[in-house]
Image 1 (cartoon, rainbow, N blue to C red):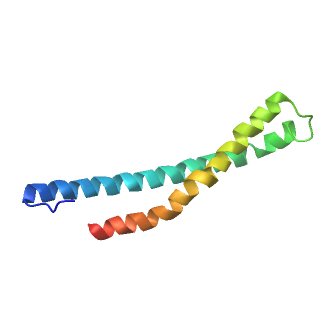
Image 2 (image 1 turned 90 degrees about the vertical axis):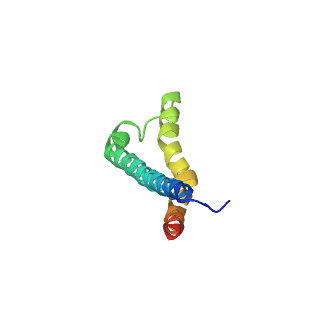
Image 3 (image 1 turned 45 degrees about the horizontal axis):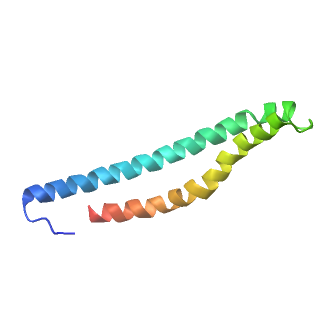
Length: 98
């Protein structure tokens, strides 16, 4: 990357860094919010799931329900959690540049 030569280029470069930092923070907060809402929904509907589904025979609808219920939790574990755990370090590195 070239070193900015003029004040205008430097200002544009700093604006780009600031925008990138803001977007990284926003992504981090939105990921946490989404996980929180998913867990909240899961906890709120657990009693209804136990009442209507547990102890019943397996059907196609029940399989689809469980795939729909378990798959997002699995994907959060596989995709989002490593990104969330590494985000503070990335934000700290970006703040150091500022």
